Image (tube, rainbow, N blue to C red; front, side):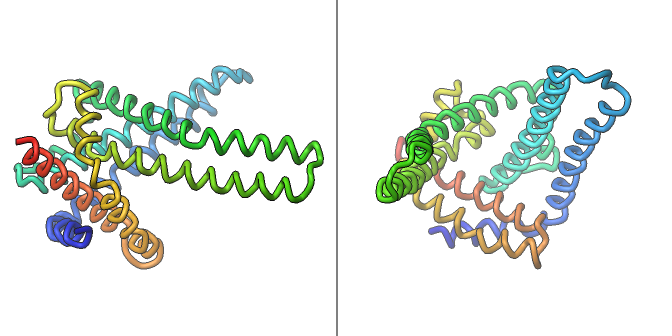
Length: 253
């Protein structure tokens, strides 16, 4: 199934490689321009050493940069999804969410999604963090090598368990952003519940699909252009999302 999704993604990408390279280059240039504003602040605006002001400016620029990345990525996902659904994609879809009116809703959704993932990330690795603290505290107190080794093994097991749990939770939320793009849900709660329901028996397939791109991303650093691999990866994920969502609608019907 993963191979079929990749083949369909590769076919749909034909003819759009140049456009995707241009979008990626535009996004990179926007982020660079935002980062250069740090230099502008340091040279022309900053007055004295005020840690609070410096931190506030840095945090604002970081969030602004992340917001621009999210809006562009959401537009790219919309373009790929509409192409996967044969819904008449347009080049204007790529920058659809840079519109101030649409940007507010998109950023709100992104903030909710990021907060939800952050919560589960902390929850997943909380036992590992607690065990790591116990290991550190025990090492300072001078415990035996056997006890330290047992605690270290526990840390490793809890880390693996946390990583598996978070990967599963993250996969459950895979189609959430695609539902937001489609606008077929009336609330964020419905978006997330729909995603969880659709991914209930497809999480392993999604993880396998993502892992199948490891070699491509590694080779993109050495041989293939990163723009093509990035486009190929995102188009394939859009194909998978369209497939998962359409199957869910058929089952509901």
